[in-house]
Amino acid sequence: MGISDYLKKGQDVLFDYESDSGRQRFKSIVEHIEEDLFSVRVIDEHFTAGEIAVNKEVHVIGMRGALQYRIKADIEKVEHDTLVYMNYKPERSHLRVDAYIIFTYKKISQEEFSEQKGKYTQNIYPDGERYFYTPYSFLRDDSESLSEAVPPDIANELNSIHKKLDIILKLLMRSEEKNIYNEKPCAVNLSGSGLKFLTDDDIRVDDYLDIKMVLPISSGILIELLGEVVRCVSIKDEKKNEIAVKFAAINEDEREIIIRYVFKRQRELLRAKEGTPE
Image 1 (tube, rainbow, N blue to C red):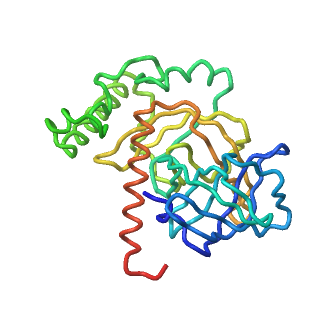
Image 2: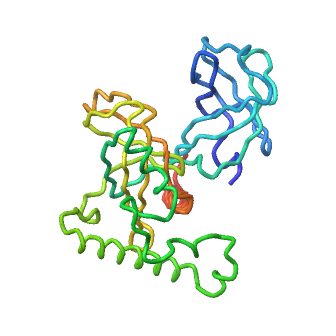
C-alpha cells in the first residue's frame, strides 16, 4: 500500500519525532502528497524547526476511518519553519487496527524477561518444549514450491489444527492450566510491532508482560510473546488506564501472522466502509 492509502490533503495528523529533550508530538495538517513524497504543516506553536535535521527519521500518526497508522519517514527539508517535507519509508508493521480478540497477559519481572526472551524468539514454547511440528513454515509468500503443492487456505487450516492439537496435548499433560480458548474476547488496538488495551490493573511504564492472544484466522491461531510497557495513560471517563506495549520478544514468523491478520482486518473495515461518506 502507498502513502495515499493513509494520507489525504487537509487531514489532521500528529508529527512525531525524538529530540534531545525526549519524544515530541505536534498537531499538523497534511499539505501535499506526491508518490512517496509528502508534507505536513505543523500548527502547534511550541514546534521548533531548528531541532529537525535533514534525513532525520520521524513518524506521522493519524486515523483513516477506523484505521490507525504510524508512518515512518525521513525528513527531506523544512520550509518557512512549519512546512515539513518527508519521504515515506514503507513498513508493513506500522498499520494499526482495532480488533476484538481473545487476549490475556501477566506481569513478569525483568529477570524473568531476560531468562525467557530467547525462547520466545524461537519456535519453542515458554516451558522449553518444542512444537510437535514446525509452525507457519508454509505461510510465507516466498515459499513458491510449498504454495504450489499446498493451497494457502488448506495450509493455513492444517497449521491451525496442528497448533490446537499442541495446546490440547499440553493441557492434558497439565490439567491445572487454563485453556485460553475459553477466555472472553476483548478490545485491543493491534499492529505488527505492538498493541494497546484498557485495564484497571496496576501496570506501569517499563513493566514486562507475558502475552497470549488468539487471532481469528482460520479456526484460531495462538500467538505467544513478551511485551514491554512504553506508555500508560489514565482514561478518566473509563476509570481505566490505556496501556501501550511494544513487542519485545516475539518469533518473526508469529509477527508475520499478526501483520497478515492486521491487513485482513483492514480489508474488512474498508469493505464495510465502501459506499459511505468518509
